Image (cartoon, rainbow, N blue to C red):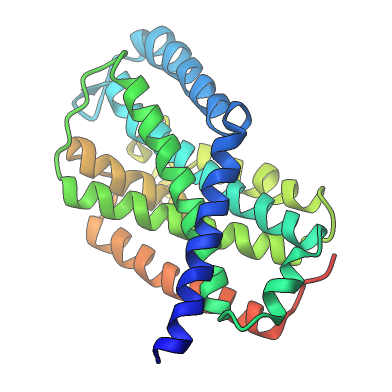
Length: 259
């Protein structure tokens, strides 16, 4: 057992180290842009537009949108890290060396996923620290906050992995973020409460998975939510398991490993 476990642990540490080294080495491209973007959101939406909107859900508009903006940064960066890194490995053919090595497919998948989660969390921490210059942020429920942000980063890291597996060129890794991820995020309650919508559109909005993640995280920070927290967390746990098993199956089958 030890002889089988040791190579996988070494491989896991190596993959995670490489992933962290990759996005920290080029921090002006990976960590700085989302920080600048979020500051612009804070200034434009929080300060300028927020003054005209007034309170929302018993909080100032700035306080209300901060959890959503933190989640937006976590989602985009955890997804983007895995999809770009794994597709890059496919493009350079280096993934083939891992596939023929005695390393378990689960080790490969966990390594890339952890890398995406760490980048998402790192950017989330940066955005959170920046938000303190614009508003006071108090955590209502620390356990829920940590659980939700880790599950969300994991889910979108796995989704980024799936995108990378099926991508055939660099254009394919930008289609999903542009035409699927961005609309879901903007319509996921980041900037508004769905209680402002007509009943029909409130029901439609519940089909958006990002809405559940954003509201669960907002509950952890502010203690308010438009959805049931138990349902949201259960959904995220189930989605994590299903996506992980699906990604592992793709790796075992070797499907999409060649560009």
